[in-house]
Length: 429
Image (cartoon, rainbow, N blue to C red):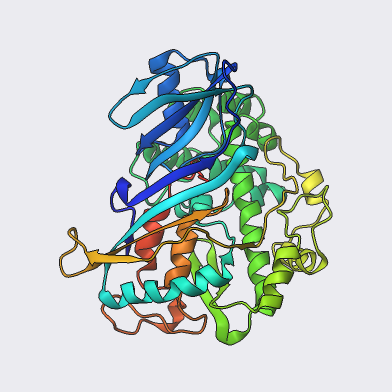
C-alpha cells in the first residue's frame, strides 16, 4: 500500500465561507500549491509579490506532500501570482481577515496505490462501517515527526526538569532518516557537546549563534538556553507530546467503550491505538457528549471518564501537575483545548478501483470525503485498512511475521513513511 506516491494522489480543498463585502478592505485570494507547505508558499508570496507578511491571514496549514487549495486574505491588495507550483488568484473582498473559525474543514481526493486486489476489496468493504459509525479523532504521524527523526519528546524532558537533555534533543540529535546537511552538523554538535566555544564556531546563523553565545557565558543554564531555540520549534514540540498523551488517553478510554470483537488496531509512529469496526449507538452518543480536551493545567480535564484516563497516562509518564509550573519554559506551555474524540466523514464517495499504471499487476483505489478541520485524512485511510486488534500480522508476501513484532496493518510501514511530513510542518489534514 502506498500513499502520496505523487502529489496529485493527495488533493486537499479547504472548505471555508466568508461574507462577500463589495469594496471590503480585505481581498480574498485562492492559493493553489504543490509540494510546498503553507509557510513556504507565503514566503514566496511575500518575496515575489512584495506583500507585507503582516497583511496576510489564513485559516490553516496544508500538507507539503499534496496538491492543495486554500484561502487567504491580503489587506487592501489584490495579488496575482502564477508559478509552476504556486498560484495566487483574487476571488472576492470582505471586511475582516480570514480566521480558522470560518473553516468548515477540508475536502479530500485520495489515491492509494500498489494494492493487491484483496487489499482493495478490504478497503471497499470497510467504507460502509466507517460512514455509519465514524472513527476516533486521533492525531497521526505528521504530529510526531520528532519520533521519526530520533528526537523523542523534548517536551517530556522539559517537564522532568532535564533541560540539558531537551536542548540536546532539539539541536544535537541527528536524524536517522533525513538526508539534509544539518544531520552532519547535529552529529558534530553531539560530539562536541559541552565545548561551547567549539559549538559556536561550528554552528552559524541566527538559530544557533545566540544560543551558544549564551552557553559560553552561562555554561550550565540549559533552561535559559532553551529560550533561544526558535519559538515555532518549541511550540511544535510542546504540541507533539500533548497530542501523544491525548491519543493514549482516548485509546485507553476505548478499551472500555469498544467490545473486544469490534476492536481494530491503528498503527502509528507513537504506538498502536484502538479503533472500532462498529460502535453501538449508545456508545456513539456518549462519545459525542463527552468532553475530551487536550491537557492544560488551568482546565478542568473534561468529563470524568476522560479525566481519569488522562491522569493515569500522566502517572505512567511520571508527571505531576506541579511539573508544568516548576519547569515552565516560554513557548512550551500547554493550554486546555477542546478536541472531539469522535469524527464522522461526510460526502464519502464510492471507492473506484483501477489498474495501477505505476505498479504492474497491482491496482489503485480512489475515494473522496470531507473531514472537519484538524482531522487527519491519513488516519481515515489507516482505519479503512485496519485489522482486528487481535489479528496476527501478515507481511506483503503473505507469510506470517514474528509475533513479537506486534500486530500492524499490512503495508503500514509504507503508509507511515509516505504520510509523514517534516517534523516542523504539521498540517490540519
